[in-house]
Amino acid sequence: WFEFIVICGNKRGSADYIEIAKQFHSVFISHIPQMDDTHNDKAKRFINMIDEFYDRNVNLLCSAETQPDELYSGIQLKFEFKRTISRLQEMRSHEYMQKAHKIS
Image (cartoon, rainbow, N blue to C red; front, side, top):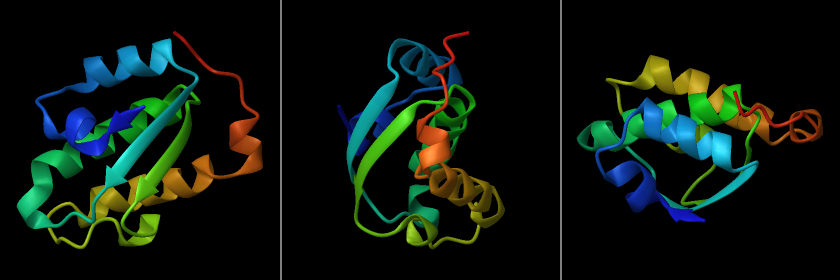
């Protein structure tokens, strides 16, 4: 279990998220805020984290201020966040949850 501010608020890179994804089949993240252009560093880390979790079929459980399609209200990362929203929505599906965890 991670709080958003811990997992996305500190300086982390893809290698950190890959290691978490390899170690855990399921991850819970609490207190995910709605982000905008003033939070782009955290939003970029969130995007990277979701990419790595998605690629390794990590089951993600979250508590957030809003629904996935409203998590980012900024302009600068709007395009990148669209893919993240799509992935988050797929990660909610029964089919995704049944996929085998990839550790490589």
